[in-house]
Image (tube, rainbow, N blue to C red; front, side, top):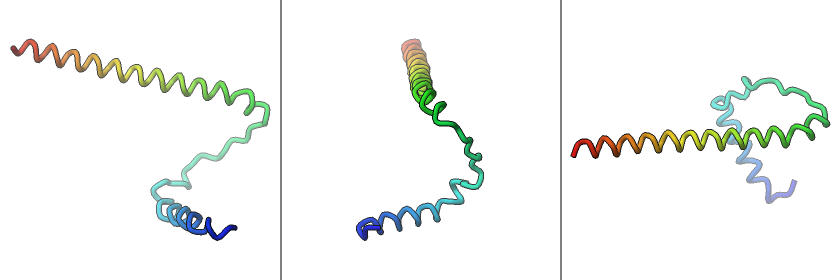
Length: 80
C-alpha cells in the first residue's frame, strides 16, 4: 500500500473499532446471494421505486407542514 494512504487506513480502522459496538455490526442480517441477471434487471426498478417513495414522503411532509402553517395562521387571525 502506498504510504500516503496509511493515515486514512489507520483512521478508518480506528473508527470501526471505536464505533463497532454502537453500529451493532453483529446484528446485521445475513446477506442474501443473488444472481447477476436479477441484479441487472432489478437495480433500475429498485432505484426508481426508492426515488418515488422519497418524493412521495417529501410531498406528504410538505403538505402536512403547509396544513399546519395554514391552521396556525387561521388561529392567529381568529385571535385578532
